[in-house]
Length: 379
Ligand code: SAH
Image: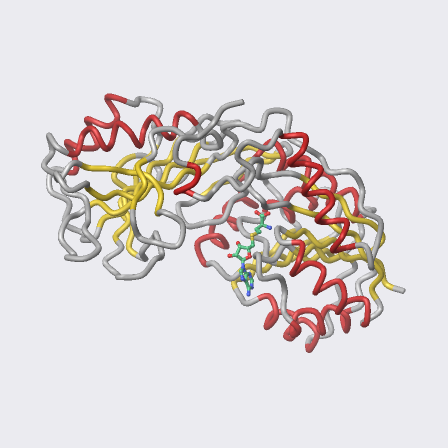
């Protein structure tokens, strides 16, 4: 089994050294223990190949004491950069591109950003690859909008990697731990990539959320949509919809789909994705999902089926209360954090929603994370 030389400092792979089959058992058991009070937990769907599955790779740039550029990850809980050449879960092409960027810096006299002094330009590099499309997005995060010799730098990078389809400069001058800033400039190509999931084409911008493991995502979405039991008539709500993936894939089986999402860039992508796939029965809204539910309830709009796919922290009481008031016959809850999932299931149970079954899917081999889809129906 492959062993990573920096796993202790990186801290990303909790299951380093644990055979993959074992990891699956541990995750399944964890979900089973947490969800035992609510429903049956089905066997976990594991990955065919648990290596190099991450289609989004982020590297922080810094320099060593001699001033040489280094790139990698923050040592767990610190701002010390651990150099990473290659990673067993990241896309190999992305790691190669990051290495090339590091190699180019010196001849272009580009200095990496120093968090203590505030000097230097390059802070982070983000690479996203569409596994089905082969398109590659490179985001160069700089501390200032002024990027001397950027045209020649882009040329040199494209010469080394003609497979890159777009390059974006993102400006982050703030002293926060957020990777991306608000200002963006496309240096080459269209500024986003497209990828294909379940037969639909999706546009993905630098700041939009997109599942990092496309092969497993298809398994997850297919399961979720099957559980929704759509007949072609339903009004479907896709809450926390990101770039609209679930809602758009579900649209062919539904009457109408409404998607809601907080991130403006993701909503813009979702709207473009509806057009791109010629889907006419969906509408996307940019709002907090909880607030949106309050408005929907006030307007008397009643969804028949609700998909919800909140961030790790789970949903909130406002959302769950309105959900219960709206009284959809089915709720399909997709979760990347079984603890917040269990908390929300407990709340929904009190509100009359019974979980009918849980299906864990492993999207994040070697890490402790596990994704679960749960189907609930109204009693
Ligand atoms: N369903 C999508 C995205 C899931 S990730 C997919 O499968 O790709 C969770 C999403 O919830 C993110 O896009 C995030 O921006 C969004 N989000 C976080 N908090 C939110 C809130 N309060 N209201 C609406 N959306 C929110």
